[in-house]
Length: 182
Image 1 (cartoon, one colour):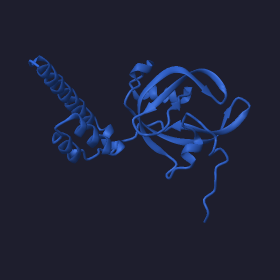
Image 2: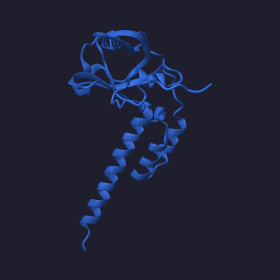
Image 3: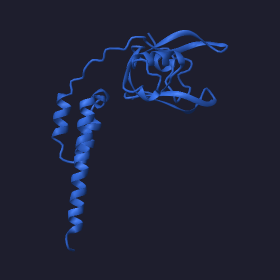
Image 4: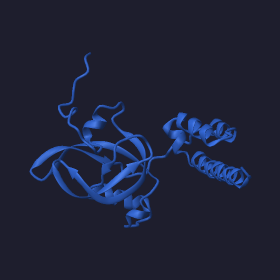
């Protein structure tokens, strides 16, 4: 059977929309909101201020409407502050026939229950990072990891610690070399 093309597939959009999920299999995704910010953006030709979520995973940012905002608020113990809406796993699905003004369309919604994230096996990644001896090694190895491994808290913390250590060691070497007589 031939694959059919969604009529909005070729629209250039900066933000995640129903058309993006419609193209995926499965058409629901679990992602982790890294942060939500209130900022200016152009959406459907109109400039305005919006709540915009960015994700750890490699997917487009998403405009957070009131319905999805209430779900996020419930996931963080009722906090109404965007600054508290960080590192939140969500399951995104397409809700059909949603009224938006005078139009009816498909829209993205969060499932009302926080999804259970499967723990990634980070043991290999941690060993690889611990074997790095320079910033160049660290960057090369970290960027070679899959997005779920990169998003793992232990992996990110170790990467950040090693980066700080290698940067400090490099600065100390430069200072030592600069202190030597020419």
